[in-house]
Image 1 (cartoon, rainbow, N blue to C red):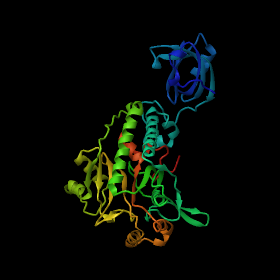
Image 2 (cartoon, rainbow, N blue to C red):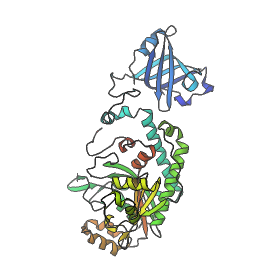
Image 3 (cartoon, rainbow, N blue to C red):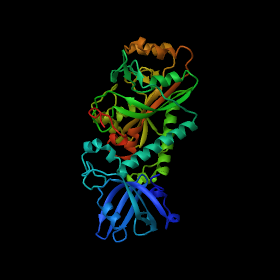
Image 4 (cartoon, rainbow, N blue to C red):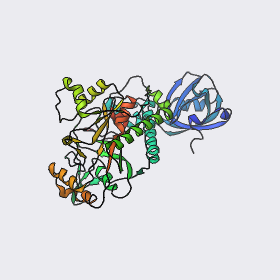
Length: 429
């Protein structure tokens, strides 16, 4: 191996011994007779102290290198309480693994920032910044917490198709593709497949799902390719069972992140409070009443970005549910309750992060709802078949991972929370 230690692996027992480290040269300070190289690896930074009179050839080679060059350095590890980590390395030999071109298209530690498009155009360098690495360390912990919690609740992880013959939700905002001699679509969500799974006996399933939605948004909180926690569970009484699962999952994730990734939270200067359950619940009608004088919205409209923010500012709650939406605003599979749907949205600081409902499990009622919405029932024959031979009452939700992280970390733009964002204008890198 080209290294024996990461920066955070070295401790007092290694003082006086020879170690090999590897990473990117973040900075070089050449003071003439002595030079200090800051080497960065995935765990932190290392000071490499090069003394000219002791290793003149090595000194000349190292101080001539460009920033972000990748090197492997072997040397003596010694205590130095005046530097980071309380230790430094006196190099004995170095291997130049990859020489970085200069100038860099994007600085890693430069004080002068670059515009947002430039950072995304050079995402591989942008992701070297400690703030961005913290975002994805937290994202990794977010997923770990999700797996831990849902497995503890008896959920089975599944993976559903991402190519289908029809729009899963009956809408038109889908990406089409040529599938051999037929037309196909990228799925908007695993919704229909999750429901089919309820007929199999696997009565609690979840997926870290990909959403592909051809919506022509151009905002700081929308993506055309995004990820979500998508789950479905059977033998429920009503949507309250689903909401309890959503709030318990959310609380568990928050506890896990604030304990397991506190150092990354500190880098991002965020310290969120752990939410108490149960979360506040207000109905659609109550929410509309709260903002009626501040918006032109009328009953039956869906809440947009402005309305969601107004509700959040008025309620002064971190997490809250909005329930009992007008039936006509929800997908065909939402369980009716008079003129309302047994549905809910979960909001975080005025931003919708999850949407869910009790689903229709009766075949006849499902067909009636589809007919009412003028859907082509023949296109859903495979889906409907699962409801003809025994389907238990069920429901579920999808929780957007990027939206959750955007609000949790207060980074201001959802594109910062996914490695290579896809939006209305960006298809590369």
